[in-house]
Length: 318
Image (cartoon, rainbow, N blue to C red; front, side, top):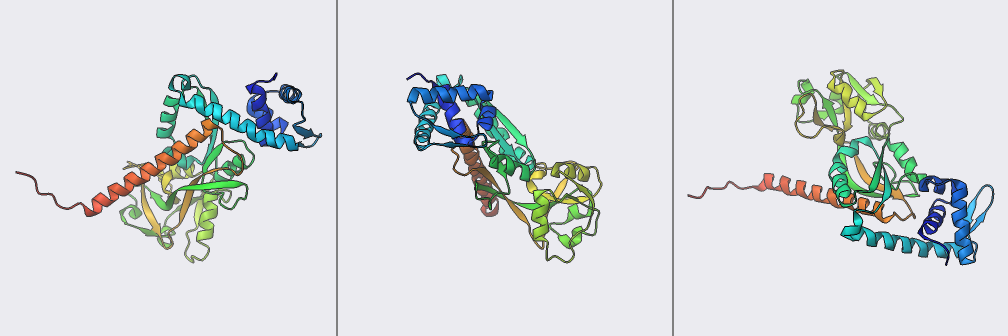
């Protein structure tokens, strides 16, 4: 049959995205070039794969059946190539990950380093945006998968929880709140308080959680991004409630955090992907590596915490 893998990839992209324009963008082709590949495939098979109008594109019954087989063929080939060490260094491709900025530091660096060492010619594009935009990128099929803390209520999105993190008080180390073991929301209101704007997913979570809190703090400064908020705290302009992941790890010379209580507010960070759309093998590998790495990190923390609590006094041998 007179068609090749590029023609199959073009067909699968149109089938998954239901759009010639979106598929052409994803494959870095012009729409006429993409159409020619689909026509070549249809001529080779002797069947019509899509019903096209000026406003929509839908697969025919034969197209739907063939799309399943084409995906299996392409995925099987790519998985085989990724698994062959000598070939893996020459495998090319692209994976796009949308991620809220506060989760980048925690989840991605070690995994991306390992992923790049294994498949050095696969390009990873990170789109670091706010929670709402990350969700929209997944819904619009503009990213393979994402890291986010919203999306559990979306019917078109699968949400795989990986971490539950609390909101904490961010303040300078010499601030009066820094000496406390925990801080209530009422205490927070006694100081210059800053927050993110209402367009932020974090602000939405906090507003819902604090609906019935009578002494909730009143902000005097509002910004768009959590990273900006942390920078203003570091500059000494006030205090803020931020997700724990937004704070620098370990001891920091100009920033510290204290648990917030009454109430304790948490958010769940998870991997999100478009429901019903299979990931490419390259994207699936990165997705699985993130899940595995996080499970290992959580397990290590649990073991470390347990050893600190129950470690008995050891008598040195003589």
